Image (cartoon, rainbow, N blue to C red; front, side, top):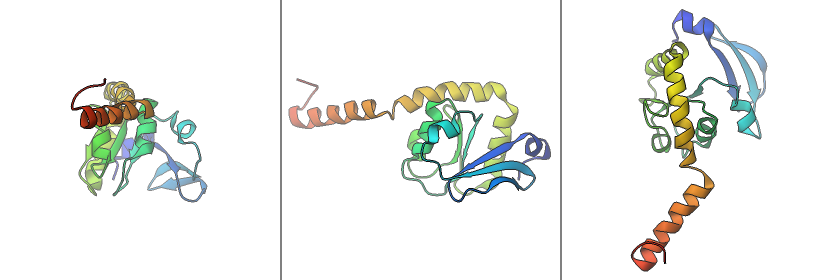
Length: 152
């Protein structure tokens, strides 16, 4: 559903599933890399992350991409809505709305300034989901429950 100009300019790297190598998807040049053990090197060179999952627990691949400054486009499902702040650290579209997904992709393909703004915010947002931050915040909840206040 991408407009022809965006379709010509886009290149897709498919991560997950079976490796098929170079392919074409509806007129878009793509590379099917298959399952990858370490998502970080696979995502590091991308300009944006298309995450079309229709159901998602937390979306750790989205967090990994955001940590590298790769702004995501995703359906607003599951834990993705906790990770991605729409139009701040990425773009969220209604679940299953392929036309909205395509429009969001076109927007980020065409608007380098928006991609840069979202990329910077993505890095900051991803830090909120680091192991250290999540451990510290969980510990704070336990202290609150046990002591009824802050750390002692």
